Image (cartoon, rainbow, N blue to C red; front, side):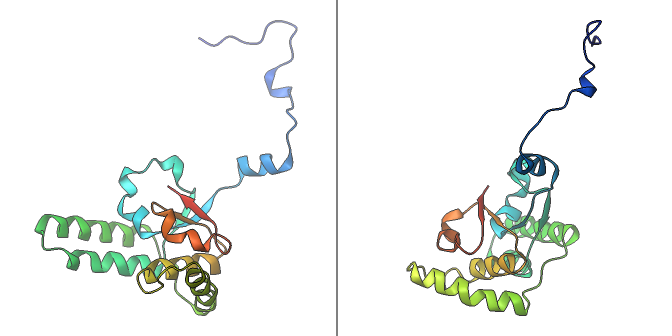
Amino acid sequence: MLQGAPHGSMPLSSVQISMPLSIRRSMTEATRGVLDTSVVIDHDQIDAGQLPDESAITAVTLAELAAGPHATESKDERARRQDRLQWATATWDPLPFDAESARMYGRIFAAARAAGQSSRARLADLLIASTAAASDLPVYTRNPSDFSALKRIVKIVKV
């Protein structure tokens, strides 16, 4: 059983704690971010504390999830991937790859190329990062090395 404050002491509710504004903001503002495909696929295995309070996916992630069931011969895996696709479409309205995302893709492509990363092999990741950057949102990913060349353009959060 909890006991009240000792007689003559100041009630806890009247005690004020001083802290910098940046810390107060971070304690009250919700975190926001774009989940890359790896996070959506493994969503049920990830500690919710590692994810933003408000999340989005991109149309590119939705496209990758839609292709997933067709990329396996296993009936069980196909069913699992189809379930994941249906769950994702019921959970999020994806951010579109729009004109601002397309403009941002030029910067993202240049950064990947300058770092010696193949833009063709990681096309979906670059498009996801472009959409996130255009929306001024960080990318939450299980594969931060896929985005390492982009960290000066878009914030990458390892999950």
